Every structure is written in C-alpha cells, then in structure tokens.
Length: 116
Length: 141
Image (tube, rainbow over all chains, first blue to last red):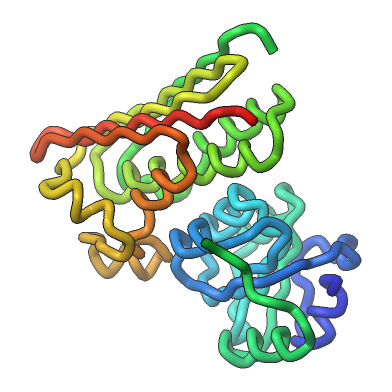
C-alpha cells in the first residue's frame, strides 16, 4: 500500500512532504506512548497517533517510521511541520479517531506491526 | 573503518525541546561510517530511550559513545534520583513517571526493557539520591 492509498482511505489532508506520496508502507502501529512505538514498531511502518509533540517526529526518525497520521483532526504546530520536512517524514491528518483510522487501514489490507 | 571514534553530549533534565538530538547525531555518525541499517536502528533506539530517561527523571546527564570496527559502546550517566529496585524497573510496563510525562507520550514503562532488548550487552548501576549509569554494547553484524 502506498501513502497515497492511505491518504485516500483516511480522507486525509497531507500537511508535510506531499511529494513523497508514492512511498510504500508495509505495516502500521497506533499509539500515543512513544516508548511503545519504539518497542513494538517495525521498519517502513506508518504511525497513527493523537500526539502532536516534536518528539513524535524524532521518535519516527529514530525508529525508521516512514510517515505519521494524526487522528481527530489534530494538527501539529509550524515548528513540528518544519522538523518533519527536514527529516523527510510526510505528515497526514485525518478526521477519524485512532480506532476508526486503524480499522479502515486494516480492512484495506495494511497489517499491524509484527513484534516479538 | 579502522579507527576508534568517540562522542560526548551533555543532556539537560527537562529539556524536551531538544530531546533526541544526541541520539540523532550519533545515528548520523554511524550512517556516515556505513554501519548496516538494522544495527543503526537498534543503537539509535537504545540511546534515545536512555536520553529520554535523563530528560524525564534527572537534573542532568552525560552521554558518551565509543565506536570500534566491531561494536559501539554507549554510556549514559545521570545526576538523578536513582532507582530503588532495578529488577522492578526492568519489568515491562513498570513506571514511576508522573502524569504530565505520560501526557507527553513517555513513561510507558518500556524504556529500560527496550534498551536491554536492543543491546547485545546491557549493564545498569544506580545509587538512590546520586544517579544512574547505563552501559550498552551493540555489536556490528
């Protein structure tokens, strides 16, 4: 599945790095706890979160997460968008809640991160 | 890569704005040296968790890394409250983080287990009222 497919399924607005929408996404994890993301993620995944702090971008970069979707129409500040652009991490924003966004992507064939 | 490369960072407690900077600079150095991606990710995750622990719990700390052709050693020493029961702190899900830290996305009780999980060798020493030292070695494949 590409990021473009994900943006379409989630009716999402692309708020950073819209040039990279054809990148492939292999799986996804949904979390607001960054330690859980660092523990359970797998590379080339999508992070679905409601947290809009700068360390979400840094966590994604450290963990090799390809893109982030913010749920419930939460929009990060300009500083965070700028950081994401620097790190080349596309950001999406959807009106759906975390449960619904995750369910829609799972139903469309995007698996969860495999761990342990 | 034949030489030995070292780096040092000061970490200030409570400085969430720069959280992850030391880990990202160390990651950039490993990338520059051509270390494989999976090993870099393990080192970066373990270091980031350790860096966050200093920022969350301690007044200040120091991160030192040492790269040889075979592995990377990362040592983090902090001036923090120390850990009373290390065995308990190593359990997944155990955390003493206050609510405001959890609201920022940290304090899930996965930090120390995650450092251990991503290291080939992991040592932790702590003195209550003085601080904690973590040393991790990650071998290059």
